[in-house]
Amino acid sequence: MSVSGHRYFAINKPYNMVSQFISPDKVRLLGDLDFDFPEGTHAVGRLDNNSEGLLLLTTNKRVTRLLFESEQPHKRAYLVMVKNIVTQETIEKLRNGVTIRIKGGVDWVTTPCEAEIVEKPAYIAPREHHPVKEFLPHSWLLITLTEGKFHQVRKMTSAIHHHCDRLIRVSIEDMELGDLPPGGVREIEEETFFRLLKIENWQPEASILPQE
Image 1 (tube, rainbow, N blue to C red):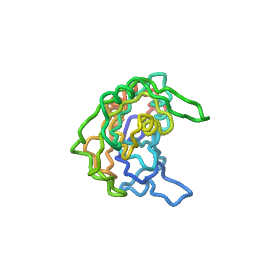
Image 2 (tube, rainbow, N blue to C red):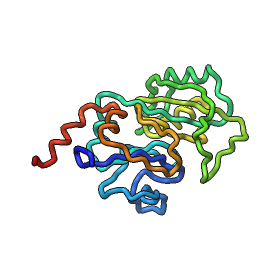
Image 3 (cartoon, rainbow, N blue to C red):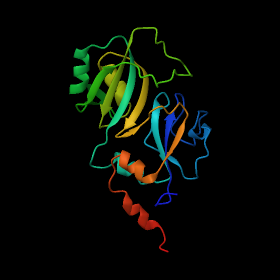
């Protein structure tokens, strides 16, 4: 049990699963994973139905605010498989910022980011549902952002005329997906959880516990 009484998890969200436990629609839910999560567990942020990879779950309602609504931006890294061969010139466009359409029909120039062409990591498993056609020309990119507009990574690759075939979040700050298999769950000790996410102002939560 953590100091605050809360529990913390990292999962590898599979393709074709929504980042929630309850839905009025007939979709695959987090509760379908082979793990007995405690009551009150919820996802910290989201990955859309078609995206895969690192998703954080916790019973601590403060985490979303501390991580995604703080003044200090937090890095999130994504492995992206796109159609056709990406050139270094195109990568420079991603790094410097591209124009995407965001909520309200507004054009938005993305904040400069880290982007590079990479080989497919050995730990990335084939996608079970709706396999991608890796025998066709494609590139794997590693894109690291500090902002998170709706479907931003997909819109960024579209802006450079490369359709996103597969998107996998591999890290949030120093919290890494590693070799956790699709659908796998890893429980994380509270202090380690916040240290890896580089959140320093979480300890006052312990004050809610009754004094002995």
